[in-house]
Image: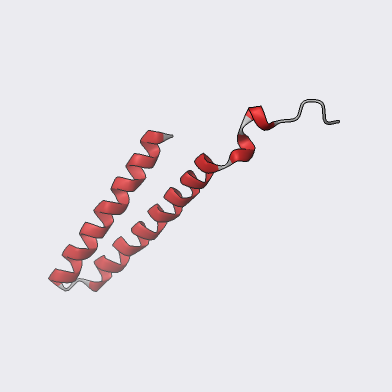
Length: 67
């Protein structure tokens, strides 16, 4: 999971670089496409971090005696 998170983070950073290059070259369409990739990558990062921080998936928190 860490490798996936790293890959998505690099995708987001690369998207920001592409946006900067597209804006400086005057290509608005390319900037919008890159922005869509950055937004998607940010959503994936948010989901992965939320899953990592979720305490409810910890097996030690399960009450075995509760029935």
